[in-house]
Image 1: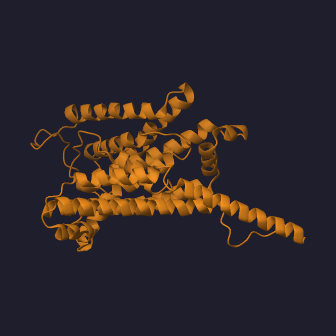
Image 2: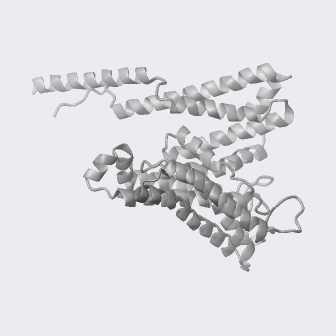
Image 3: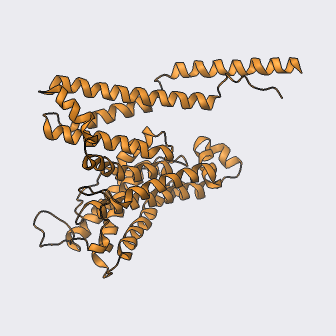
Length: 371
């Protein structure tokens, strides 16, 4: 068999190269936008840029803030990769992270357990409920052909209203005068800080392990390969005998578990009591992080830390300058548009694929003649 020219590149590697180029270009454009806005709006632009770009690294506390901001989107980013792994487009992660946090909180303030088992039971209970939340949209799509995106989007608000009812009428601590909230979490339910003066806790390490686990599932297991096949070519997957309903439900269950666990970690690790009266938005952030990572779970921690860095820098900049926090929302939107754009660099990518294909064909032809 003829050998390929060592200088030729496969289509898959070309795709990887251009994904990296798109990501790099998106980052550069985002940084350029920050610089332009700062120079146009800030009273002291150079000091403001220092606050944004460098201050997140100027102390242990600020670096801890990066990890704090990255932790919830690490969970929801991994969850989104899993939820989307079988080709379903669902927003169940947003409802799962909210209700997972709510259920974990309800268990924490209700059970009379006086040891560390309380936090484990609370987190696992919330995570198991998250499985049901994520599986339902996948089930109705496969059973009744209801679009999972629309169903999950609306179902998230059903979950919010259910949680709000129980928070207001069953779990409300009326001695708390600063809003609607549960009773304070018992000491044994709290995820304690690992870094002084921050809320960094063991949840971040759990998120890293889940990212590795999600990558192993996607790349080293039969179910993961079947999910990839189902996402890339549903008709062929059915033809070769892939159980579409089973794989779709497995992917949804794993994603819901991770998202809901992230909600529990966030609320028990940062807040003294549960007080979410609206959807927290971490599911949407997870969608953005997964997009930045090109739905590769092993890259999600890096994307989450980058987002945590942006938000930490924006918080510091907002504290010491006149630049609003909304700038970060605009930056995030531009980055997603650039990365998700199929048109950006598309012609160059196609030309490179065609060139490498011709190169390999010529090499095979020469090898055949030599034989």
